[in-house]
Amino acid sequence: MAEIIQKAVPSKYRYGKINPATRTFQALRIEVNKELENLEKFILQAIYALKSQGRLAIISFHSLEDRIVKNEFRKNARGSIFTDEITGQKIVKVAPVIKIITKKPIIASQKEIHNNPHSRSGKLRICEKL
Image (tube, rainbow, N blue to C red; front, top):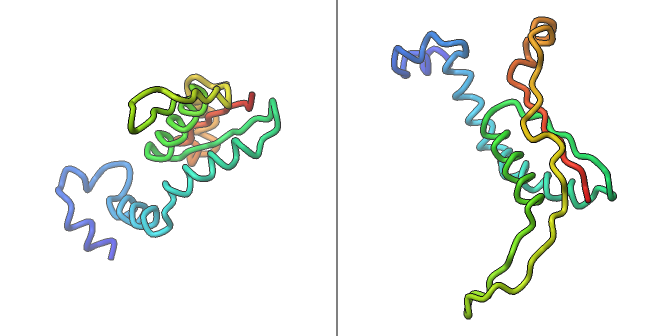
């Protein structure tokens, strides 16, 4: 199966750091397991399960996951305003629920990557419940 995928992709993608079959199987796994949708649900549930000043730390290992973590943290740190669909008036402002501790993700040092090559793609983001 991996050989079929290898032959099917354009030649410029065949010889990168990551085998094209690896990316293909990863994409299939993510879709079949609904990992991205479940990550969004998890973050919301985890934030609301925290006590005041409790912290949530999430390590993401690829950009799709990291974007979701970053956006969900931002959304809950900003609060939101709901608009009446009929009148268009702003009705309710929901206060921020969390404070973002890590403005930029924490990534592994070169020493850590040398000792643990899997850490090269990990990004750690932390928030604190208000």
